[in-house]
Amino acid sequence: MTKEAEDEKEIDPKVSRYLHALSSVCLPQKQLSYYLAIHDYHRLRDTFLRLRIDNRWDTGDTAKTKERLTWFLEHGRRAEFDQHRYVLSALSAAKRSNYIASFKKGDMESARQLIVYSYMNRLPHDGIAAFDYAWFLIICKAGAQQSYLPKADAVESMLKVAKRIQLAYSSWEEYLFAYACGNLYDEAGGAKNTSKATEVHILKLLTGKYSPIREFDWKFDLTSYMPSPQVASTPSFSS
Image 1 (cartoon, rainbow, N blue to C red):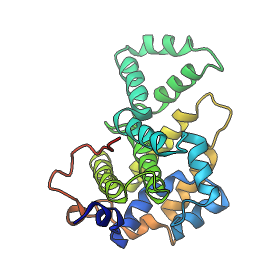
Image 2: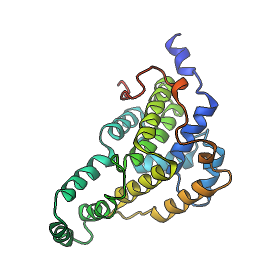
Image 3: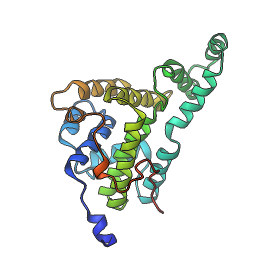
Image 4: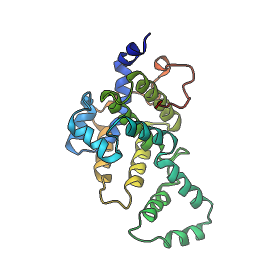
């Protein structure tokens, strides 16, 4: 198959819907979020979603999109979160309390450490990786639709990240909770806060009659859709 044919290859509609379900958590747009979750967002070039992604993550061209995707895969917000969690876990209860009390109000670093302190023992080993992986999926899809990425490469990378998500979390509930924690951490100390809208959106995803996550078991079998037997390998984009 030629490269041109590979780039035009369409993803199976069922697995596309599953990937959409995983990434739909990134859409806390109040009234529109659940509508977009139900009906998918086939036209991510539309101004509303394109600007939402680009304004938050600066993905306005091919180079920026690839750079951001690589960051999500290799570091993301989880790298900082895990570093804070490691420091706090190493302290005794008394020293941890003193450490927390020393934080400066209004400081972004302190605000983020408070989020870690609040949620560190309520998250699985992979922590807030759900936040990084969900955004990877939606940016990857947007990048392919805007011709920033070869479609075949984008599909392969999304499938591999979906597998990472399945291995990192045990249920939709755990995954969505980890995303919410990651969103809190990302926005801590910032001027814009979408935590309330995100909570409302997640509740709707969990309970809504037509929610896409209700269409799939958590361990939806990706085996037949994977491009190679090495499903746990690290996806990447060539420059």
